Image (tube, rainbow, N blue to C red; front, side, top):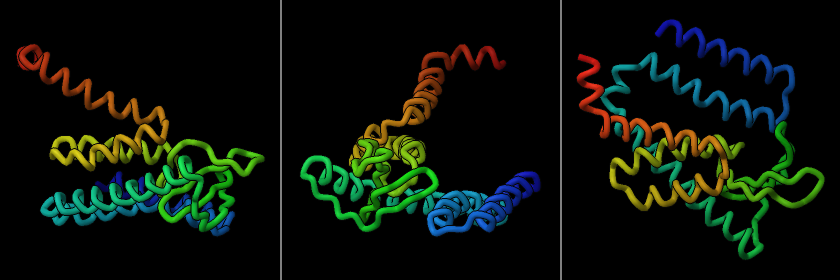
Length: 191
């Protein structure tokens, strides 16, 4: 726990130091997105017993919030690409490029044009972030038999066109196949 806390605070301090050197509104948004998960890790380490008692509630909240945001983002995404209407709330110039920000999704602009990439990003700054979080929640929903949520997540994952999705989905598939097919072998080998 002490090592994780030290590393987490090191990353948080480095991010805040970098933000103080290169402050802008888009840098603040990127720093908040980056820091959110490190701050959650610090909270989990510091309040471990409380989180262990209530972890199902937090997973459920995270699941509902992300799936609802992705569903609304997919509606906005398909509305743009199939019907041509996209309510651009903001034209954002960030460190990773230019984005068209809608109500529930962001589309990264192709450099030098006013056209967006086809990759679905939802509320995340990168398609890879969306793909990794959606793949974890996809497995979570499959085990809980929430098939509508699983459908929303799989559409979002493949809409992100991120190679990280395929890698992160192969790991639980291989683990499941190994545990089913080679369970007697693994048990006898471990004994």
